[in-house]
Image 1: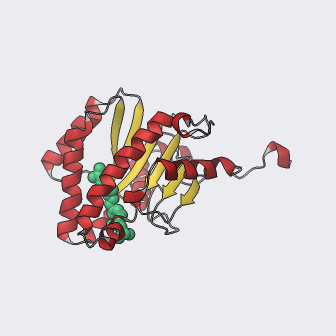
Image 2: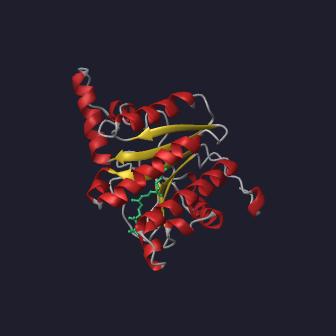
Image 3: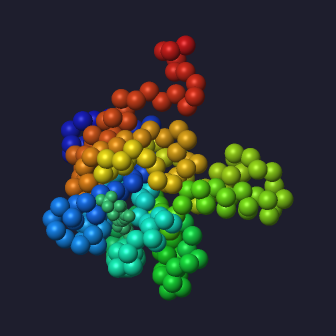
Length: 236
Ligand code: FPP
């Protein structure tokens, strides 16, 4: 890991990073703006963060854009996030070398949106840098879905079987989960996949998150000793 900002690179210990992009609403409120404006600035922050991650050599990024619980928010806010998703898909192809995968239940989304999502996934399937966008995603529902799929296929419920039937079957579990906005919880995000993820929480609100904050999160990750339930060589 090199420390100069320009050349900051990760090594093989950090391949997948996931973000809980919290704090858009508070960011907007502080400026007396509608929450939707906070989300819109949240997308800008997401863009910058993604570029930084891929530039640093991170192979996979997952973002929590909309949870199954977020439907309970005021309709105007929900509509504004869906609009941002639509716009994001239109712009997505301008990113070179990014593969998009949507995590979550697409079935209740409008058919045209669902088709756009599927098309983007298909068109970018062979590209190198992976971006998973969790949209209408819930971690518990995902595990239930995986179990049901094993049962329907007459297969035993095993850890490997569940992992293979999650939305994330194409990617290794996240090494690091970063949550902005200061709350110490996972909010139904990657419940299965986070079993051994390192978690980093910052008070910074998502629209203010930037490369400097990302480097702080990564440096914190590298200071941790990951044991995966065992002991490291120097502790035996
Ligand atoms: C949490 O902030 C954030 C969300 C519920 C939505 C996050 C969405 C985006 C950043 C944009 C979506 C991206 C795409 C590509 C569609 P909050 O509203 O709960 O903030 P608060 O805790 O301050 O109220």
